Length: 287
Length: 318
Image (cartoon, rainbow over all chains, first blue to last red; front, top):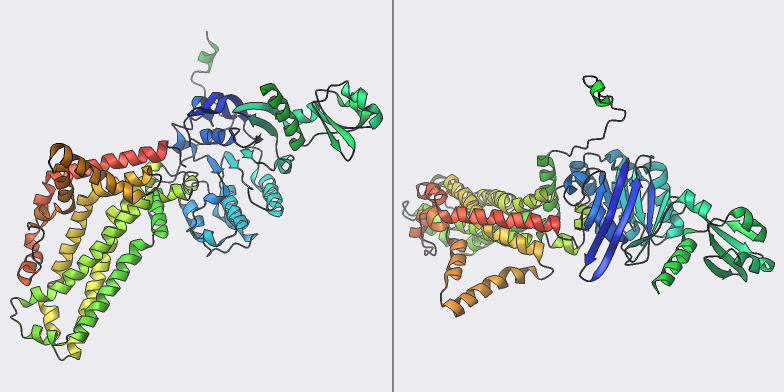
């Protein structure tokens, strides 16, 4: 079943175009990474999907119109908009009580289980917790909700690497069950490389690249060129060239690995390198 | 024949039943939403309670300073004595009510502004609680919770005043019997209950207006709540030379005294007039309910609340 489907999704703030007619389709059971520079339109797209902002064009989330059927949609959708939004006055125990009180799909025991692994005290107020603890609390609440779609907008912003690693491990091993759909935006792109099933690059309100991770592995190749093969490698028209420790690393789009492997060491590029290369290309087009 | 027709009458086989999510009952999300408002705004019960304690202490202090007043009271005409004795009880209730009114005003101004300012609105909106439920829960604070808290605090304060008064009377050799025998405490508190309900209904459009400002203003909610009202008064005075809007505001502030209690506002607080405030027969709920001002106010309040729901639902949250 399709989880998210958009046709010509468009959003304009005054004169600036935040979303410039996006078409996308996310099947259920996928983990999609929405990657783009600041102001690319990621958050606007997520807000549209969550019924937080009006838009032009067609958009269906779990078969519902998020703007007009938001109340219904929120029974099956959960989101973390930003780590800092838990109310500061709230006690941890109150947060558990409240979510258990209003959400039909909240599993309190599960949330308690996540919290038991942290040093968060039930009697603490949110304002007394460190930034990392607030994020842990929020994620514990959210991951204990049996939602069909979970939207995470910069869920690990401001967290140190230990927390981030732990969070993605928990998300994959204990939350994701193959039926749920997860949409993540983050700037720490390399950390989610192994988490994602699908990748989408967004820039200037447009989708620049949309692909499954499997397809990316077969389409893009990174080659660390042996110095003597530089000219031969350039024949295949790399997207991007960069120098690493005096050696040249090239990124190829749609060139088979068998042909490149003779010219040096090949591997799948990191999302970050791919991002830089693809964004560089689109910038070039823009100019 | 169409293939569909062949299936007519046979059971439709559902391979994977569609998941139907049913929310918790609205009354439950409503109660939890009210609960969380009380968690957040502890001044709802702390402020009236603190004022009650201050009132009690000042009663003790003033009797301790002027113990001869008790002797004077004992020698008073039993006809007028209940009225004199009721004065501190009415005054205590008035202080608690004024405090609650102030709490209500500041609560309403912050109710929808605070959650946008600290961005917690994004957390609330990530849960399946509709904007209508949230706004009604917030409205229930000045309309239901604060009146109930006010009444309970007044009753408790009155009982404590009776106990403390009796002890002080005994300590100064005055019989406390007259306090318990002559003071119509049940009547006084029934009148307080009536007053608390009547004023909540009468002030509904004021709370509605404050909630509108709270959900609309980007900053300085108090200024936005007051300046437009002053502005309209001034413009009306300058342009038309009239003061209808000001009269309307004044009517909204104290217009319920006449229909609800059958008395004029701003009456002097001497013992004779106090007499009228402790007679149940003086309450005129029928007249109050028949006052167009009440119903106009409630309709205006409903319109304001509808606007608040729309704003919380359809405006970008931050």
